[in-house]
Length: 247
Image (cartoon, rainbow, N blue to C red; front, side, top):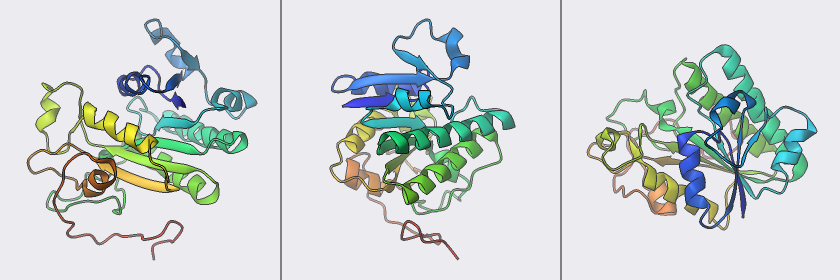
């Protein structure tokens, strides 16, 4: 399977690609502005993801695209605008070239404002702050959702806990919203293996730590990680069907 991964020089993208390369053909792409940082990395395509046919050519023949929706490097309104436009261009090119499967990497930061006493699930509304990185993640989810609503594409949204613990010794491993990189990689691998992917499916992923903030029961039932035996409570914001607006 040919898998295309965005933000090629990013630590998370490199970890994902290295893990999946054991079974799949991996290709990364990155913005040309990061060219000076590419000397230690191979096989990374430089592309602005513009609206030209070059974008179609880059993604053509990919079986699945893994795209980071929340990018911490986005700091200014111009960064936000560029990221939103890139997301739109990528999806438009995918429709034109017949690419149907996406994994959108997002973050549980988008719903962290809820009180810790609530077991927040995938059906709760995003409540992003006005900081540019979180707005870019939120708007990217909206764009992907609208495309999946309208066109024949399947999007699995993987909202990751924070911070990501890249090593077992990382301090993030004990924080109530953190996630281990091993669980991230296993989840992505199992999303790829799903035989009947949904047009729009959100998975929450955080490690099983004491007093964990987010409920991950759905992710555990479908992907197998992490263990979560809690039940939902205080869940007022539910939108049962894709395409049904909340009143």
